[in-house]
Length: 187
Image (cartoon, rainbow, N blue to C red):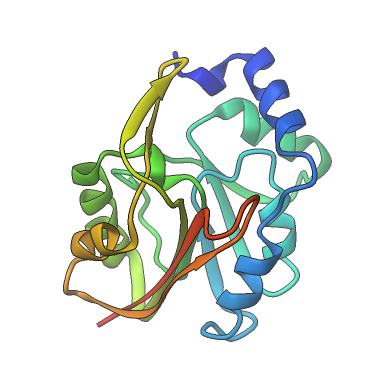
């Protein structure tokens, strides 16, 4: 059983994330991805970013936690939602873009590479990936959850050469330059 398979942990995360969303990140994504395209969100959690993404795109939300999926479905019964592991991405559909906000930093560097290779496979030609990471150094585990912090150059070394880097930049979520925005395009 994973950390977010327990109701108290899901409720605690929702409370902690109050006031934070990916509006800035999604505004940057719209610079590279035309309105109306299909987007797969990895690790949708309570669905705040999914709701913003839906204003511009046809979105499929995903999470490994069925609790997050079911909570979102209560208020959005017609939402396209799937339980999905961000590494293996066991889905038989393709998308114009894949999006995540502070999700893939729960993967080891090797798992991140595996995920990016699989993302390349399920992207349409010239598809876009848009992901954010915490900027920093090292790794840690808390409550059974793994966290990997990246320097920009370290993250760029992991990206398969099957992608072109459209932007790789630091931005502020809580503190100056505490986050990395990465937007790539499938070659």
